[in-house]
Image (cartoon, rainbow, N blue to C red; front, side, top):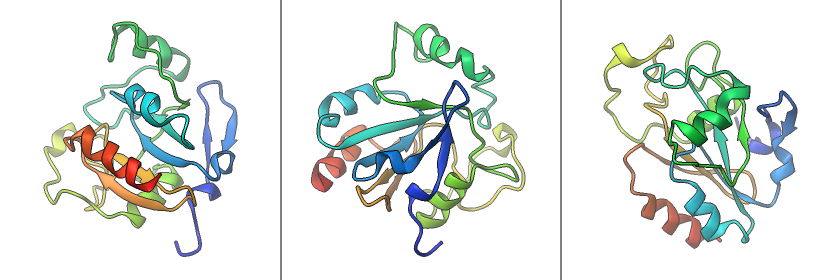
Length: 170
C-alpha cells in the first residue's frame, strides 16, 4: 500500500452519498466507532482535527440498525441520553472479513494489531479471521494531516492517551 493515503478512499454517508476522504485533506483524523468522541471534538475541533465515525455490526451483532436509524440509536439507546455526534457519521461498514471496506484493509495493513489476543471468536461475525483484524468496536486509527495512518488504539486504551497524541501532532 505504498504511496497511498486515506485520501485515496471514499466513505458513504448515512444518506447514501459517497464522500471522498480527500475532503478532509490537511486535517488530522481519528477513524473510529463513536462513543466518547464529542469531547475530543470540543477539545480539538477548531484545530484542523475531526472524528470520522463508522458503525459496524460484526462485533456481537451490537449494531443491527439500518443507516437511517443510526442517529436515533445514538441519541436514544447507544450511548443514549440525548447524544448527538459533533462529527460526521458514515454508513455502516464491515471492517473485517471478505467484505471489509477497502479503507479498513488499508488501515489494518498500515498499522498492525495492537493486542495479540484475538478474543472470543464466538462473538465475531466475519470470516476469515486474521491476526490484524479489528478486535471490537471503538478501536481507533489516528491519521496525520497528510492522510497517513499514525497510530492504532485498542478498545481499552485510555482516551487521555489519544488526546495526548492528538495534541502532540497538532
